[in-house]
Amino acid sequence: MNLIIHPPEKLRGTVRMPGDKSISHRAAIFAALAEGTSTIYNFLPGGDCQATLACLRALGVAIEEPAPATVKIEGVGLRGLQEPAVCLDCANSGTSMRLLAGVLAGQPFMSILDGSEQLRRRPMGRITQPLQQMAATVLGRQNATLAPLAFRGGGLHQIDYTMPVASAQVKSAILLAGLFADGLTVVREPGPARDHTERLLRVMGGPVHVYGSVISIERPRTALTSVEMTVPGDISSAAFLIAAALITPGAQITVAGVGVNPRRTGILEIFREMGADLEISNERQDHGEPVADVTARHGQLRGIEIGGDLIVRAIDELPIVAVAATQAHGRTLIRDAAELRIKETDRIATIVSQLRRLGATIEEQPDGFIVDGPTQLGGAPVHSHGDHRLAMALAVAGLVASGPVLVEDAGCIADSYPGFERALTKLGVEVEVHS
Ligand code: S3P
Image 1 (cartoon, helix red, strand yellow):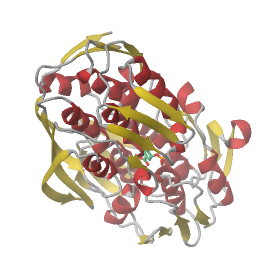
Image 2 (cartoon, helix red, strand yellow):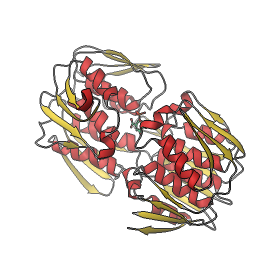
Image 3 (spheres, protein in one colour):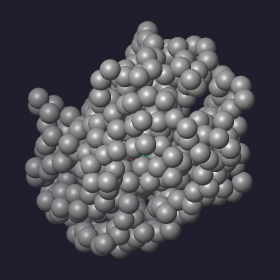
């Protein structure tokens, strides 16, 4: 699918955000491991979370989808998963593969996790090594560093693990394996990776304790309890619409019901530091997660330097920061972001090459990029490389280009934000969809 974005005359309105991708994955997996029926509203109907549901079904979990974005899961308990008869297909979803790896490492049966060509290129040693240290049997290509990954789990030992990189997927894989290990499993994190696993497991009665950057978990004495919950809107998806409002003259957009967990709001801090007019309202709590509405208005932005822990709290939003930076006055420097190179694409290389096609002044760095602005972007064809966040970032760049921007291979947007094109249309953008 290709998209053609025409620069809009006006950009205004309110959009309710689809469910957070990270929380949807976790809600589904934890509900499967709980006892009783869980109902999850505003579950992200995107490709990545559908992959998690398909894997859970193949593990013997009954899952219904009685209404759009509503999922009903019959928990099988911590010992109730069954050996799958098929390979578990995680499609493009790194979160599905890494979190499920933690669960499968603890199961006394054989299972295989596989995914798309893109996922098969992403590094898995970061999870297989600690899981092997916990005594899981894990096999995979290139010394179990690349999928497909085969597990013959069970008999796990506790671990005290210092993570070499701040990664919520790695942290979550170890904590999930810790549910099946003997003794106390401890994870030490070098930076503030998102903590949805800790928050939701605790709500469901999981024995998780957090002491600053040290998290512990042990085998629960009682079953995890089922939940009825609404997944907060995804701030990572909202970031595209917020950025759209900030850079488009005259624009004002409200994104409603967005998760504002402090480990995810790095993007709001970055935009504020760039001078953005952002208003947070209607703050509330839902199942351990803070939620709010965010209103963004167009205004002049300035270039800033970003590094350190702020990068960890905004890692998925850096492609859209690059787009906003093309419209900011002065230089924006992103450093300490080498993790971007191992996302769905090498996001440093892909955002630099594609924004250059639109005329941006952007330089690749080993661990980030430098953007000089403001620049009048031009209309041109650009390519998503199969990366949902790149596709959406480029579509937003199209809002301020002097002519139409063709985003090729944009079907991947549905991995995390099905309905993105519809949201843009509702806000006043002319979007042509060509399949
Ligand atoms: C995620 C964690 C992040 C993020 C990804 C989702 C999660 O990855 O980039 O989109 O749900 O745990 P890392 O854990 O590799 O940093």
